[in-house]
Length: 322
Length: 291
Image (tube, each protein chain N blue to C red):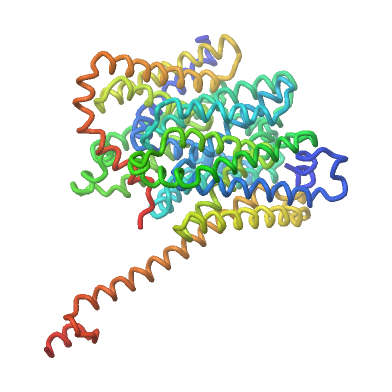
């Protein structure tokens, strides 16, 4: 957590990208936030933000477990997130409130297991630093040999979302209509949750659990405040996510000599702060738009109230003249 | 297991369990599990900030918990509630990361805040926990009927003059207070497991609100007692046992409900039309964007 270079050194194997670590961060961060934002639009529309966040925490638990037994952390992340997604879906959670509870139970159990892994990790290796690492920015190394797997997994998450585009939206907006039209609502839900698990665990392993949720939910939520059209929202979300990530990396790089510690502010802080600001701006814009529209609507309604042919808007006076 | 230094742990953990059972019941009923997860972590950021500038972590924790709860309530009124909660959560965690990067504290202090330190509780902490616990329980007792009504049937509550959004804000403040009370002793993560696991299990056993509330408290206390005893015996963290026991109780409850449904299916089916669609519409209404 001591500045951008440490994080980059942690994420990428030293010696592989010695020339331009920042450029690599820009590329990987950009790709990961792009995938997250696209998947995130559906997460927000379907009201599964909690699941998206929980899968990140579960993946992190898996990552620390893999760390403990010396396996490749990426598999720990993906495996735990997939198992968590399956467990959430197992509690036949069709109503949003039940789904909320099922997610909470799985997350609670996952956090308990995380506590155990961390305990075992600290008692064996005698370092508590792992806790902070795991929660606030993952330092797990992605080996060069894993990059094809990484790309393949992100593409598969995107492919699931692209293939299920229409049924996903329909079953999110109205499960009943989707069911009536022969959409297998539950299967679509499970497939989506699995895609979400893969996308989230990939972003967790590269940019950490906090940022994973930030780029999954933040840009998508802001985009959906700006537009109601899903296609446009996906474009907006992707743009916002990539912009915010790049700007965050840049600011963190610049902050190296900033007070008070003079060792750089964390990237995660910049990215979440930017995401939050973007959301607030989008919220403000959508409220102004809504107010304008409602003003128009009132004006139109007043027009219609007037007698046929009576086009002047003087209201009572006009009526009285008649 | 009941030696002098353990007495405080048992007392504090029992108090926290009772309050978690009561407030958690409403958390599950309102579908606010995400808020119950987010607010304690926000409080954790506040504690990190307070330790940085050298004031009481209790104050920092409480301030951040209340502020984030109110922010979630206000932003959630317009936007999607769960997305706003996620945003508030990551923003607070980001702030926490910033504070941690500034401070020279050892990581173990942070570890204690997240996972709790039941065995290191002082007499002052016991008193503070007791006072906040009484405040939380009294708030729930005073708000009991309107809160219950607005949780189960928001439309009917509005018709009777209960302001749903105001209830939501009151409830969020109660969650923030519970957080302030519990995080220093049991930690952010354990508290969340208790607040969701026990009431979730209790709801599978009975439909009556008061019965479920009582059962929720009972299960919560049982989980905590078993967890402390098991932790004492094995040296493994309390949080592990609480998290896993919560899930075990929940699965047991679900299994019991399924078994009973197969036995008394007719009764259950006869009741379904009355409650099913109503709950469904309110629940979906919660997640659709207000136009």
